Image (cartoon, rainbow, N blue to C red; front, side, top):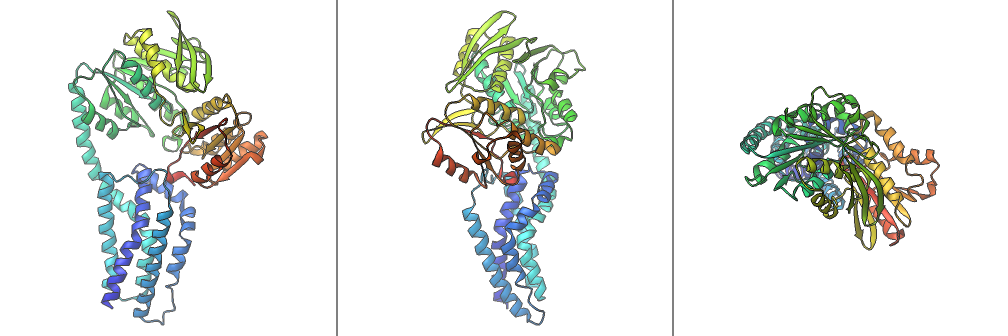
Length: 526
């Protein structure tokens, strides 16, 4: 009996590995926030249950009539646990993750705590002989880790909060000590990272600059940048600031204290966590409201929510736009090609022509904001022109690339209505047959279905072949396509990106263009 229990105990631990990894993975993709994780778990319960049909059937086999002996029940449980281990490991080997679990220090601490909790629970098989307890512990291997994640999160959160506070204070001290550093803050519902990259290229023509890398726009991302990369030689710090709930920009402004603030856009992004469009607008505009008295705000006046916002402080403002002409920097004569974009900037001193490798009106707006800051900091037009011409395409944001001889527009990181519309407009001007591969947009609260349905209607006349990824979340796009009169014989719905690319490789030619619009993390791709 003891040997059987030891074997059973070991099998339980192994059977828990895959579900525990999945729970940790989804907790990470929900930003380690228990509330977000809870809502995700509720929304995805049916899908998770479907995946667990076979494991649950295996477990239910152990519900043998009570006349069997405890030893027989334990033997059956051992067999079922072994089958469950084989099933889970087999499924995991086949799995292809869009964004794999990243084993950060935080995740490693969560793994240790999860392991301790599981060992304590599974050790019960050594102290009790009731046949149904064995069944209960076996059932726990499948559903338990998902529930234990709440315990793990609750216990580790205060520890992580304490660690983060120490690092934050250290980074703030380092920033405050850099007296002559010009600090530039960039926020917006979209366009932040692209604007940051363009601004880095332009301002580097005159200044030694540092920018937050990739999408490091949270307190800890900025802290890591400051502590590890900021040096005394740096003259300008370009800081991207993200927000997905009320108070985020306020917190970052008190941390960084920029003297130049840019708001690139405001729209229905993260509605699920902000609660309303009014909250989003108010929070994003804290970038301007909380600038110092000698600060300067740079605003995109093509965005109605920004244009109509009534500032409560008298801060100098520089405006830019394409549709809006009553601005300080206006772009016109915009022409796209496979090689990039040509356009003209109008300002109080005259007109200046520009060439850039970047595509789309949103990128032109990003360039305009960089021009506004560059001129404010005294950089010549000639240097700005050179920088804009040489600026590299931003990875995964309307990035032209060749794969296996085919032309792709990689817009995988643009997950907002305005960006998606811009991408469709760019695609419409490309030669050959025009493909789009997309799973749609998420994190848009009650408006999500409506926005995705509109996205579907916008494809008419701009796309020839539509490949939708994930049957559940693309339903509104499908409905929008039908509504618009799109030829549904040219619409395909697949369950994975791998299947989508199989269609591309089989049918697209070198004359065609394929738009990759948005790339959802695994937690939301289904």
